[in-house]
Image: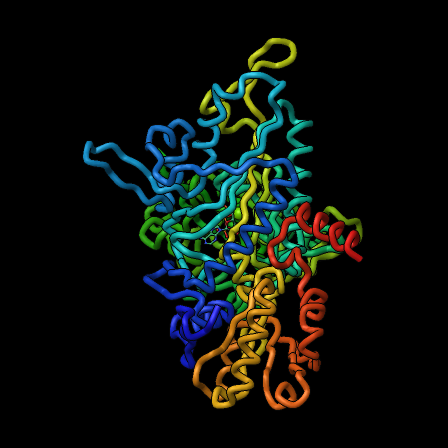
Length: 589
Ligand code: ATP
Ligand code: MG
């Protein structure tokens, strides 16, 4: 491609809404253009990148035995009602819904479990046809609460989604492992530094699930790592450092704490450590058809994991009770809600079990109680795991191990969803024994745009993007030093022709060399080929890799140089084609 013809533009200015590097660089280098909040146009350059990511995904999925399909984006409401997710997703306001001229309601696909289950039901009728794995690469729509970070979290985005159908939990586990391996290969080929972490199933299901997290400080997720076990903070079980609670129970007393509503302030004023203060939080649990309130107690030095709360109570959403609601329910206000005389269901994190002689609020404004003890002073709550894990906590999976934290970008997610959808949609097959049984299903997603953005997040410098070879939209940037020198211009053209199979860009613009090279670095092209005086005098080309490595290569050696630096696989040849070509080369030696 000649740059004079390429539809592209680079920018000096930093886009004002870009909060993270990948978003900034992708806009500055003209890969994406923002159309609205969470909406992006992919330019020809970006589309090439996304096609390359998709190509790698396709190769590995096909290799793993999956078959590609293309599913509609408009889904009838009734289908989503039959799985129960119409209400779930609308309660979360995640679903875009539309009506047709006959007033039939649809949603714009946020994911495709329902449609794929519909497709397979009645087509796959016998265990003999299993396992089956279908996937697609296509658009998804989600009305995200906080669309941000460019392609990381869009309202409309590209996803590879795949679904497996099995006859048993054993076959399901095999399918899951096959996908886990395929995903690992995909992200390795993309040059990503990633970690596989245990995850929370979220809205899709409750079975075993793992995420592929690309390590990056700009990541929205927090990953807890303990030796070779990793888990998303959302799902992490942990044990806080030991705190010695005293044995002899003391007499409960009331103390005055006017206007003190934070644990920090309370601890400072009373000289009681936060581990000895019980914090009580009022939550509203939102269900499809009702709302309920619960109070949850947690040690003063720790925070509650609200996703654990939602999971514990099987609610769609969990929100903090408002001031108004707190007043109506407890007669007190924020900061003074406590387990004493509480007329609400009261739960507490299991780390509160050993607490003795602790301080707690008592639903009376400006007052706290000290030396409170379970049972003697207030009913023993139902204990559960509501704790938000922290770095330094012990990891129950690794004896003696403690967690370290790291930020990550969730680029992929694999999960065993059991029979949740096949049950709901009555998708059955006949077993070997002649019985009807629901399919065991797995679902597997990769954010295609998010993955490309994660590559930029991990690979860039002050000059711009450093694409991994595999997904660089063009591999070579060829330019004469000056467009005024005819030999250089003709030489650059000749090299461009010679290396046409290696995805070259020819910078034929009438610009200064420095300006052109800056563009090349911003775009992240892996190699710059500079055709200058050494070419005129000695037919040698100056080559500089994006990482700064310099080489001087003779014109006659260029094809050999290119074939060693840009392997065929990176040019999109599939493995079969590569072995064919290699065999052919060997025959010709
Ligand atoms: P998240 O927790 O980040 O909201 P999710 O768990 O809802 O993601 P899945 O339903 O598992 O996402 O979707 C599969 C993959 O699609 C994710 O792993 C992620 O890479 C990508 N993805 C999800 N939501 C978005 C989005 N709004 N924009 C871009 N990519 C997304
Ligand atoms: Mg996910």
